[in-house]
Length: 165
Image (cartoon, rainbow, N blue to C red; front, side):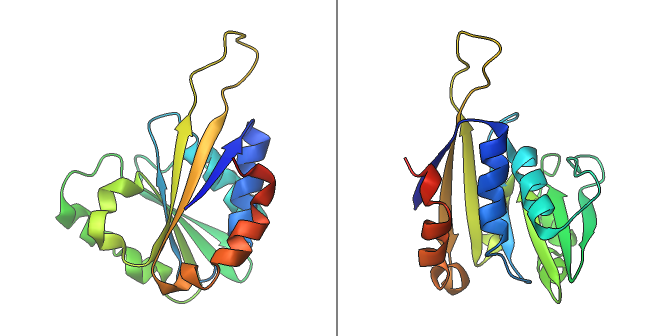
């Protein structure tokens, strides 16, 4: 596990960009955290680093937004409204990741064992500071599951070293 501290949304975007530079077609990245933790901000930084030029928004009601990123397609999935395993299976996440796809899944904890090999990004907002003009920091934990991320782990540690706790 890698534990990072993002002091600002810019830090969250930078951490996401560091992860994106190591992502490969076929990857599934599960974003885990409470409402307002920063999952969509992470997705925005991730997409920008891949070359997505259109605005990245949470796909809560459409479930999946797909973005062209040059040689890749970024599929941004939101499982917030799904309640049954069958509904998740119907999204065919593995098929989205095939070929040139990378899949980012908000509310990734809903996947349970369905994710297979993936990177879990757990985001937790610290309590808000007493000064309302200062945004709360976030703790971001990276957990690799499976051989694909194990092979990149040392590079991921190096890429995120500036934000290590």
